[in-house]
Image (cartoon, rainbow, N blue to C red):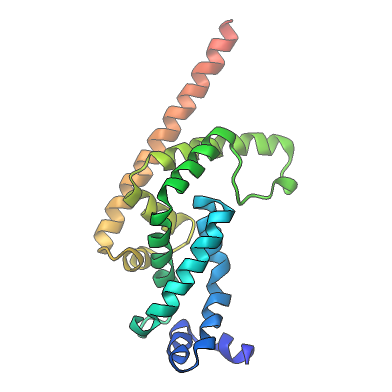
Length: 199
């Protein structure tokens, strides 16, 4: 039966799960790994496990209200995940600040990076994490759904329950602020290097 489920759209799986609740597992099999990665990058692996469990439990109980005209359930699932992550928001900011201090991404497997690449990537991760932590939550949500979850503007709007124009404006503001923060961080690095050369 797994082959049959893999041929069905997400909407078909959700509709079928109304009569055969076990069919909902097909939706989990398709999307849990991507949503886990999204949550882990935001909160760390341990909290991401809780987010996945809470997200799919909520989706299961809400499946009767799913709009079956939408064949792809990713935006719906990410919307639920964002709400669950919102409950863990302090953990997300702590995780971003830890990444800003250490440069260690909780999802990156460093075995395959060369040492000099790890150092350069670590510095960039720290700066980016600090910039993300400084964003207002609603701007960070839009930016990360586009950048990490690879959702379209329309899908982000659906996931967050906001108009596409709001998605565009929040994304624009978030990108501008991140660019400004990264440029400021680069200037600080250059200033430090110059002060060391003079010493």
